[in-house]
Length: 384
Ligand SMILES: *Cc1c(COP(=O)(O)O)cnc(C)c1O
Image 1 (cartoon, rainbow, N blue to C red):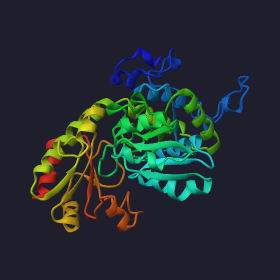
Image 2 (cartoon, rainbow, N blue to C red):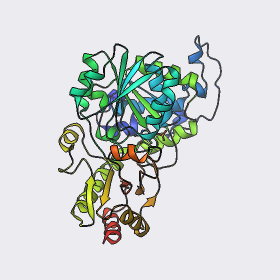
Image 3 (cartoon, protein in one colour):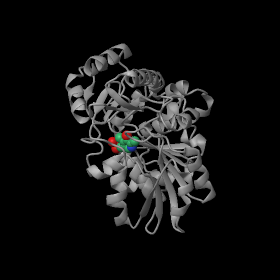
Image 4 (tube, helix red, strand yellow):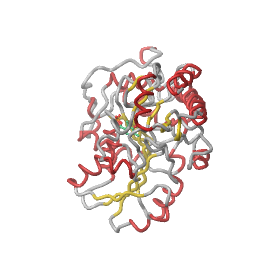
């Protein structure tokens, strides 16, 4: 059904909606029922039950989200980490080896370092900008490669085309966390990745009121993720399905504004004398600008900056900012600021952070959709 709609704007509204509509309801109702009447199903996985991820709320949402990246299938999950951990455990088994990009989302890094070894799964970290160095880390048991479309908090964009080629030529399954650009700006599936993963907590839902995740890809791979999810139990509740279904409909209008506002704020900050560096792939000065411009339709709403006055100046700036909320997470309608050294990357040692280029004074901004003039004037008074 989703193939009938061409543009992402239209798919967001119409793809996956039941036809005919349930009792004529324009908006898909919440099916707050744990189990459904037995209908002669032959397999355990086909029994209709919330944990088996097959209520009308799951099915409609799966079809809508799959259409956004032109993927064959999608499975929503209880959080981004449920999607990531379930996808990795579907693809990898004891004795397997994984190559993963070296600047991962904190939760994913902790999963790799603290949990996967107990499952007998080994990994090596790769430099996303240096594909020539990857082959040296291949092993006979290397099974998959794991990337992120934009890294947190420095917004680096790796050579993703090389990652797809590398996976194909070595028979690896390729996975990518596409949370930061969102399907509006980038479809890794179209580039050739096998699985595209999302924390729907961020842009897809966009309203900072639920946690949710999704895995997109070919039907056979997504089916194996669903079966694993049925066993591990990280299923999205129907009420959260409803909120994600409602929130995602405005993804296109929100992302257009996030893209535009973040670029304007990045340019303003880049010109301000109190600012030492701005990390935003939309700026021509960003080391991965060309790669990002080639792959993405927009550069999304995330940026980070360092002040010439370092940590002290960053703390003063936080005290003076009035409009943004000081909070972790990202991708909602409200502007948020955070210092990664105290939040997302607090789990790393200061030495590990320094190696990753994350100074204690680094400020990360999730640019919201408030009037950009007001966002900029608030940063201006805080920095002046
Ligand atoms: C937030 C985030 C996650 C984890 O998602 P949750 O919904 O919090 O479980 C994974 N990857 C990225 C890039 C994120 O920003």
